[in-house]
Every structure is written in structure tokens, then in C-alpha cells.
Image (cartoon, rainbow, N blue to C red; front, side, top):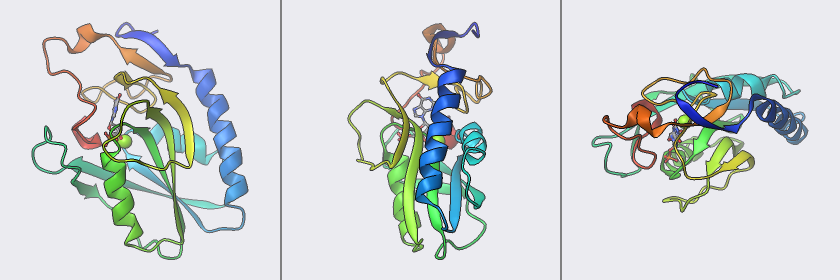
Length: 193
Ligand code: XMP
Ligand code: MG
């Protein structure tokens, strides 16, 4: 285990098993459909890479990156797109692949924006959802794991851009961020983390 991690919440093995299960369910649902997997940068990259290979229907991959708009300490829920999709989605079934749902604000904004582009359908797949009161309710169609309201890193998730390459999801030792700014899980968007 990495020296900065105090507890492994979800092991590599658990992730592997879950990804295979999700891939199976998603394959059944999207049989014969024009599927676009939309990954959110950067946190969802390991997840979408593994999941795409567990889905056995033809699909396309594309990515979006979003950042908090203005003062990141105010949870306005308004986010700015820093990388958009390459093309229109009005003839596609879109499945958003997200690393984690926390307050729900980022995803709420993204869903709103994508709906206005008239995809044939729009569903959500999140590896993790935190057990907490959301600022915006999100209906998630596929969930990997429910986790406690703790700051987690690994398998794409970062603290100050580090730990994304850990093969498991773990809780960061508080001593790592003591003295610097505590990781915020409510008000910052992916690009700020
Ligand atoms: P909201 O609150 O809008 O945020 O649902 C979702 C985004 O916040 C990031 N996030 C985390 N990143 N460890 C992280 O490394 C965490 O515990 C955590 N909680 C939220 C993440 O980028 C997610 O997309
Ligand atoms: Mg994310």
C-alpha cells in the first residue's frame, strides 16, 4: 500500500469484478444501438479505459472536461467547459462515464447541457457515489460502489493531481494535506482538483 494511504476502500480485484459486471449490463442494454461513451477528464480515464473493454457492443469514445466557473469556494453549480465533444450527439445514445458523484453539481450541469443537444438517450454510469446529502439529485443508471463521505484518491481520483495512478481507491492520510488546503469535496470541480 502507498505510504500516503491509510485505508484501501476498494481493491484492484473488487474494481475488476465490478467493471466486468457493469460491462455486461451495459452491453445488454445497448445491443444494436449507436453508443457513445462520454468520459469526464481527468478522473474517469482509468475507469472508462477498463469499462470500454468490458463492453461488447460497438461504441465510440469521447471526452469532456469541466471546471468550476469563477470562485471555486462558492458552489454555484455553474461550470465551464474546458474541452468539449468532437461532434454532435443527436444521433447517438450517450452514456456519461464519471469517476465519482459527490455534491452532484458538476453532473447536474453536464446533464442539463447535454440534454439540450438532443441525444437519442442519456444515461449515467459512475464508479463511485458518496453517501451524503446531494445539492443536486442525480439519477444514476449504473453505480459501481457506494462509499462513505471521505476524501478518496486512486484509480483516476487525485489530490493536487497526484495518486491518479494507484490501482485501487483509498483514503488519503490527513497528514498529507494538513498544513496545506484541505481537499474540498463539495465546491470544486474536477479541473480544480
Ligand atoms: P460534485 O460535487 O460536483 O463533484 O458531484 C464531482 C467531482 O468532484 C471530484 N471529487 C473528488 N475527487 N476525491 C477526489 O479525488 C474525492 O473524494 C472526490 N469527491 C469529489 C471528482 O472530480 C468528481 O468528478
Ligand atoms: Mg470527475
